[in-house]
Image (cartoon, rainbow, N blue to C red):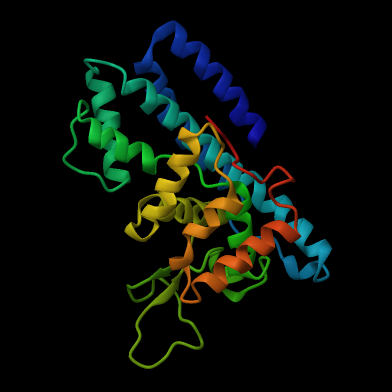
Length: 265
């Protein structure tokens, strides 16, 4: 799947040079739709119980999840490049403004102006990749390497909750008075998309986004090991959870094995 995205990236760059930003924006929308259609042909996770617990199961899990994370990061990378180029235009056209409005809505930033530098800055903070090593480590931790009940029955790789009755699976250990469920997704790819969107929009992860921007400003690609320190609020276990995620990245060689930034500017 990353090969498909690489081909699109090359063609998009050539068409952008020849026809400008409007066509590039249209192709971004087409790419997003095509990506979802291709990746959603697989409706459920493989049965990772079929692999012995340990290195074999881990390898199978990484081989399955990593291309999906890379595909979503590749899409975000193209959208970020489009937004960066748009921010340098003095008078964006109607299609640019429409697509910008769609992005603003998707990332929780309503009432925007294309010429508003503060708005563009905040959208660039949000419209960025989540390092592959971090996405893989958290998926492994939250889903038990794809073997948890929530992963197997709900395609939920990251333990994301929902609060409407019937929106997911009821935790067996849910205490009296609680109403949350663990969200069900139609496909594993949708779970990955939701996780990345959550990291990129939720107020609790503002520090993560700012640290990622500082790395970019310093000319460094986002690093899962470095950015994990900003995710203490992801779990009630706080810093203990962060250390576990960092250990997962380090012990399983996720940054060294092509699971680093996923895509860089």
